[in-house]
Length: 147
Image (cartoon, rainbow, N blue to C red; front, side, top):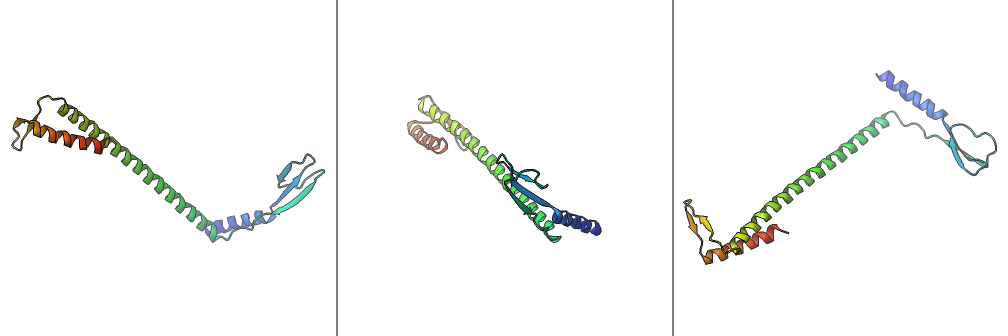
């Protein structure tokens, strides 16, 4: 395996050393970039040297850095998705509480007789003072949940 990696690195180094890139403008004033020298009339020609091959340890380091950056982006997107789901659940819960508070307020303000249960579980009809307290409590709940 070690020999294969060395042979591959040597092959890339040899190819990169011989690689030449040409840039020129043809007679129609179009810029042309090619690995072959220009043929025919050329206005301006530049020879671009290929970059030197990287050392054998650096590609692995670059790959590791790219992998780390990929994992970081993946984690960030996963966190953002979880945050979005959490916000959606919270909004749905607020909406449910809002509807409940509005319906309670509507029942209390309707003037109908309202019954409640005490600590023992027995039903009783609320009087006007209790109704006003419950209306005030329901209004606060509507304000808090229905934004």
